[in-house]
Image (tube, rainbow, N blue to C red; front, top):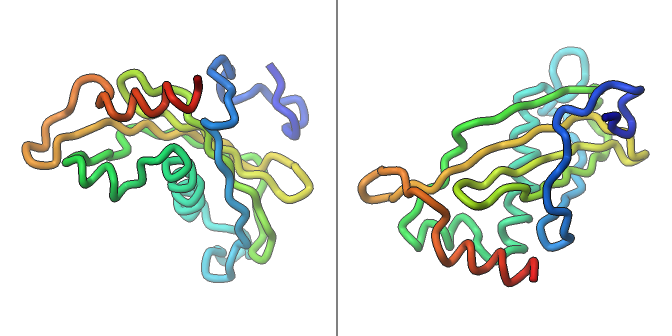
Length: 156
């Protein structure tokens, strides 16, 4: 499977997940000077901050910000991630970071793309988050009902 903007390289993941506008959000950012490494491009560790911006927009759009989840007595740590860097991003460039919820039955799996404003794919990644009870620090097995119900509402 080819991914647009990759010069014929294989896609990082086969995209066989629900594609619903309510499950996607994006943010446009300018890469600041302090994010650059000595070569003048965004240092790879900063990409996780960019993902966080789009992930927060997605969760807000769905109606459960991190504050809301915390008020429910839950923590949502990232337990897995995978990243593929395709093109460097010079500081000062504008980028669009998109986040798409692709799994939610037992965990939240979010897929990300970072694109230059010309549409070229610069990076793709995913993160996996699981619900943890804040008081006991025990894993919550299964998706909390309020979250499952909210996603069902927006997807229809």
